[in-house]
Length: 229
Image (spheres, rainbow, N blue to C red):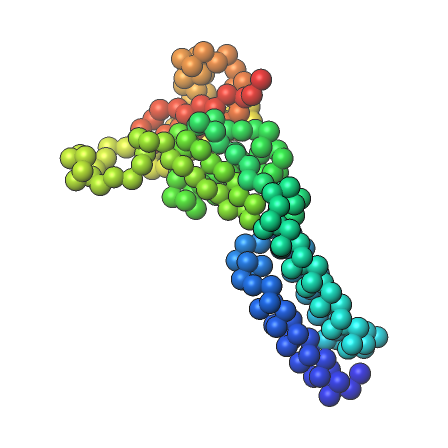
């Protein structure tokens, strides 16, 4: 392949890809669902072949891009007009926390572990699960969170309270995950396993194996989410 042909192929691939991306609209870029991800990978692969693979005719590459784009637009129209079609192309949101309880089955379906869930919550400026009433994993991977009513944002002036200064711990810290005690975190908090056992007994829980997730709060209390039966 000559330099001129390479430049021509890259130019055509770029212009066609740019025009087709504009035609598909911002939704493909702004909301990466499974369907959008598949579309992006497919179009990118075709454009890459058109640009550098001399065995691919320019005409064939352009036609392939156009046909793929048409399929994308048709499926987008189905997605907009049919709820059943939308469930196939983009899936549906999953409730991962419901009324303050962690939905273990939903986490397994979405293949999200507790570390990932906590990371998504921290992105929403939520560091304690006890503050969450509902959390919904959207089809584009974003987490929508509804805080408990007591945690809804208000100003300190509205409540006429002072800042909490005498906290025991800087951040909420998990000490049980999927029935297993995190001894390292207990040690960092200078807490003994006997303390944890007593707190579990207060909640009428015989063993850590019966707990899906437990987290020590900043005030020293223990948030507990039992395993689903």
